View 1 (cartoon, rainbow, N blue to C red):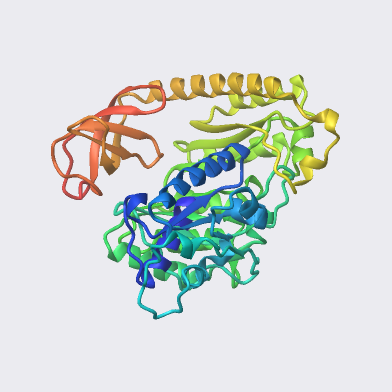
View 2: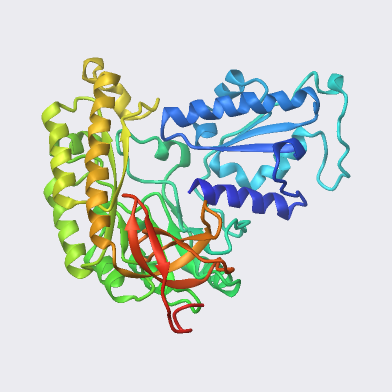
Length: 447
């Protein structure tokens, strides 16, 4: 979602005559796009902004902005923490980004740029905070500057109506806002016309999407049938909205990939209730069974938080047991990170888990998840797969691609293959990724 937001801001700026450059040293404006999910990410942003401030010694006219969820969460407080930041702009302000930059640079729309080279002229710096949440803003009519010629991220939903007690997203992105089916399909038809064959539909709880009576499974079916689209993915769904109708579309539409990200967060009912996840472990396992019965070859991934306030050692062990039972192909694992303004931060102080204990639990969880992933992937060595080639590999003469089940494989080939589909056989695994060798295929497969 952050990649998509970055592409959106680039598209907005290019549409107003800005040119995107590859080096900070060449820029007149630098926008740092941020996330607020975890404290560590915010600390990294502050360090990055401080580093960029060093460029001002030689270029006083440089404008530095901070955009995204961290900007929305901290707001004007961020301008105090980092006084060298000129602009703080939240996700609902992107449409006005060019206008805000012109205000900061002392120009009106249409003026010819006049760089300010004198440090004295910048001695009194303007600072702007653009933080209003707009319940109608779903970025309709705005065009992204897509960074990949292979696959495209397509936001269909902004914000979230869930109130998970650990999560800051509803407070920095506002309530759920869905784009119209027509607008989504028109965008995807344009993507396909440009030669991109894989799209990922984005939303904070994407499968709760509904617009003009069309639920998410209806949108997914329509997207899967767009001419030129060969692969469709979506992220990130909520387990409660994995309905029989959605499973049926996933099982019957050839373009929908055999992959599902299903965030569980915890394997204990008491913890799930305190997280306000609105499902039990039993219900989650029923969803997993339903999905696997309909799509036996599906690859499942998940998110897990350990160290949530009040989590006992026995409750943590329940999470490990769930991981062993479900056997996810991949898992994104985290220590609980307090986010100011979320309900979990108001729990009694004696319920907060010491950092050393939470870290030890995280390390145990990671070991379990990696072991399961490695076992699954070793069992898949020898499989024939179709890869969509995304980019060159790290080693000279190799390419990296992804299977329909989102497994990453690297194979040797000296050709020009970016964006093509190739047939491979998986010959080995490092645990998380595969090595492969190219296989003969018909022209219908490789194009």
